[in-house]
Image 1: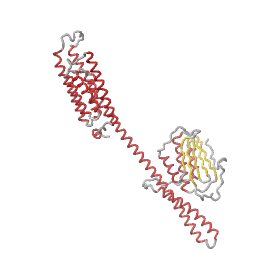
Image 2: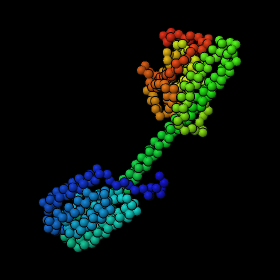
Image 3: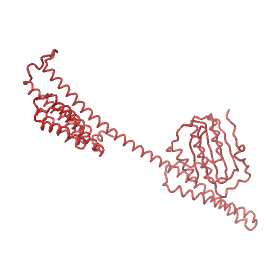
Image 4: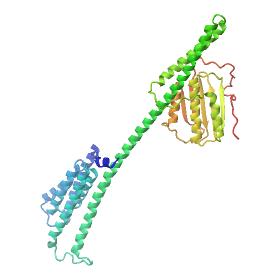
Length: 445
């Protein structure tokens, strides 16, 4: 907030609850002032001189304290009323001064803390303070001639008693009015800073929301580009196979049948990829999106090797019957594993990393675990986790990320497989999860 904005800022008015509190405050102070008046009359302590009638004493006591019930709704008017009534009550020698002075202090503070126009609030407070000191001077000038001859008979100090009484009165009033002015300014500055903090927090939340939205859009665009490349590849394969089928259809029906089977498989895969691509393309495109990556599950071993080179004891296990995955699923599985391994290297403080790829009946699963800090918190708003969720969700999969029961951290993603996912020609059959994995990389020294 700039200096001009700070000068233009207006504190919001009191809430209904604050108005109710002011009502109870004004009534409470008025009741205590009436008790103080009763005690003053009972003791005969009439410091300002012979008092007026009892009814007039009640009137001045109520008139100087009751306006506090409007102190935050109309602070300037409340201060003016209390100031005028306070001086008039003292001029009439009203005996109640304790809570009347407190009401004046409270009204002066409230103008500083709640006044909408800062310049007018400062001028009003300074004017009231100057008026009070002027009234104090007038009171001293009028009262000095009426001091009884033996009023200071027991005075033994070096300062003349009349001067000492005047200086004491001035110092007390300086402290009272000074504190009222200072605390009022402090309360207003605190309210303004609280407003600034709320504004900054709201701007920060808005910026974080925009950053998350940009991250989601960017990730979707990257996924869409990857899917586009995969679909183009399958359509090209279908064209080549159709051309070969046309050339050998009459001479070699067996080769033609093989080509038609390949066309059918490619068509099914291409339709599936097109469906996913249309889903992610619902979001607007971004011109500064990063180029698509070409990594697949066959490159997960490279991630493990990099983790081992960084000093971790890293292993890779492949379980189940390996099948030919759609390229988009393979790339998504690779990217999720890459992000999980990267988080382990950067944040976990781990020593052991275990990466597993499982080929199940209708889905493929990648599982990354480590023995790092189990108590570390997962940032659900982090861009890396958002990217993993987007990649897995684009393929109708499930993602789990969080601490393990036995310690450490786990990221597990499952991707459903198409209905026709056949083992590649010459693929080696992997053992089940209960057996040793096909790939079991050696542990680091």
